[in-house]
Length: 214
Image (tube, rainbow, N blue to C red; front, side, top):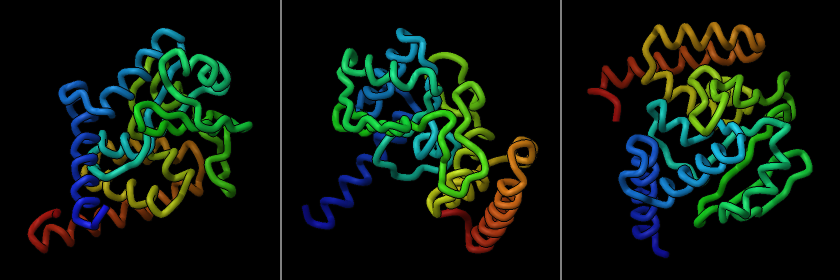
């Protein structure tokens, strides 16, 4: 595939991603269908599922490309999810002993983020469960403060960039609410959050001086 075709395909995929998040079901794309099947599984099997990662970034204002769907599943449901997935035509690509399972549906990868696991080697906390992310039943997006917590805990360059871009789109009241939540999780995350909030405000000011965000 030449460069122009690859770029065009990536933009088309991004458009379908954004549509699936912003206008669920309208296009019946591969992303609509994978979200529908996960929602169906969640409801019928009683497994709460919280969407995090890049799709949640889109939900909260940062329309960026992602190759997969990241979802948090509670620890007691991890084995059940793997067992029932084939009933919904979801392929189990990798069964991880620690719960970081990899699934696939119609070519879309589904990355399982297990409650209680360490999000990164040096993280001082573990992955919160769906309930702590605001999803007590069914499938839904993690609430904004919970999503930020998962990003700060992973602390990869992409995760930090996601937080900065979302904070640029977030009103001050919501930012204060996120900060209050993070302050109750860990001081290390609070320091990082404050740094990223400053970076977001600096970028907003710079963009305003240069004619607005691109």
